[in-house]
Length: 343
Image (cartoon, rainbow, N blue to C red; front, side, top):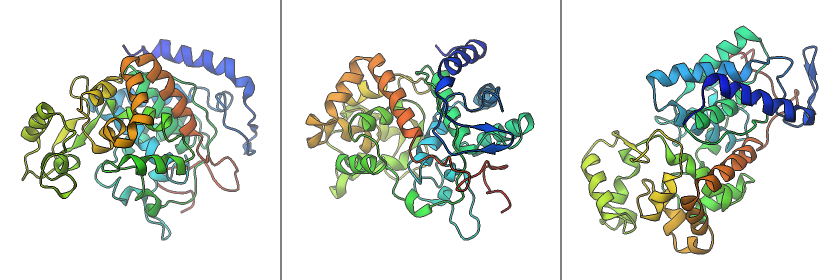
């Protein structure tokens, strides 16, 4: 069960109090110095930052049950391109092509209006203080915890980057990637190519995905004009009804049909019986090279939700620390998340 707003904010306050002592960031008098990320970064300058973001997310969730999964995906796609700098939120400007227009994001990345709403609320409460990159990190943690998943102490203090890279966004981990490609992309992102890969892939335990990302597995896997042999036959028949061969590919399907909006370890129990929706998911269990790399981790997480939750929280903290911008000469706190200041 997701915790209530009041109890969760109280718990976060305790976490912040316990860990604020390790905060090395000097933030006062309108100035910032480059330093490490820390839990208590906004304690003095915007103490209600987390509760403000949570309020916006809870309101958005009332009309959009998909929003929590969408927001954690935005954080993932942000951190894997140029680090966690809010670049995924930028519109095209000054000759820079937006990451929003890259193939992995165009038509599927969503949640931007909710981030903008959180930013507007924070600007009302504490103007020019909370970065858009930090909003994504906060929103990801809240989204997981309010969906029944683990909480973690979010390290804060990122500045927003000044550039965007559509070219780099084209190389995000993708739904058709094989295991060797996935492992290489995680190593390139300075993450572990086994535990972090398997744990963060568990974010697919909630959310929706379009038919276009499974039709090849159903009808023409690897150009064979046959279905993917690793796909559970009963699940394949179910998906074939929802995603017909000549359909338009836009129909949405639950990544986890059993608990589609709950953050749990069913993602891994599905992989155990060849019911992974995306090829990139099933590869973690079924690729010939998985038996000595990722499959044992899938097995462990399938048998222990606690083990998954612990590893997921640790991996999210690691991912959130990919090349953050903390030097004010290299970044800023954007007034609007879609534009650099003075653009």
